[in-house]
Length: 265
Image (cartoon, rainbow, N blue to C red; front, top):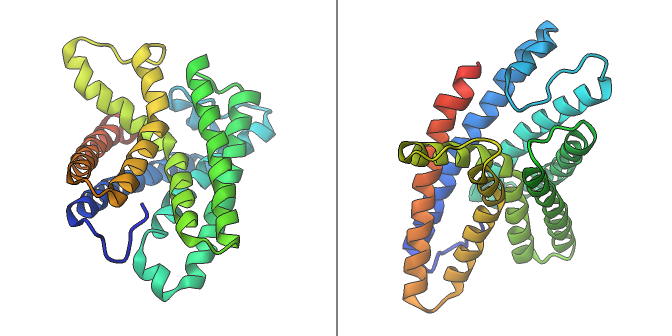
């Protein structure tokens, strides 16, 4: 998130930092899984091992372009996950502005390339679960392009306030793939005891698919609105909601690590 040098509302800023911290932990776990799952088969030549992950069109014999796109997509995904977080470290921005700018350029470029790869895998290779989730993924990808361009343009114009906000939006959208997994596992933890099934063809998955990128954007806009607001009630509500989002992100990330990622390694 975009943090002012001196937050006017300490409780709101603390809630945002807590959400970012839980989000960062989820990112690190997800990036570790990507590297640990895809790298050993890549080095050993046992590419068929990628097919052990359900709902993934992994290695397809003879599909050189598709297999290459898959690798580029997942490794760039791990890269942008880690690089994007570095952009929020205030010490880097202040002390090493050149490093900050180059990380930003690599992040935006890698995000666009990874998104293009995602479009190829979805629409050309046919890595689709259902029509609704395909629509969600596609809208997410389009918005990544939009905010990446807006972030670059505002930086070019030296409007750094707008640049930080657009770059943050792009960062959250790029991590929609992570929020999807965190959200699915959180939904499973909360709804399964109530007898509600969470499967890949049902309404819960479709809802989570859209919320995986809409909800983080909404939280960020709520943060910006509360930061500007002169109404204490608005700040209190935003602080509470962002704090609850931090707890939900942590719970979903722990569930994903335990039941989705670790068993595949």
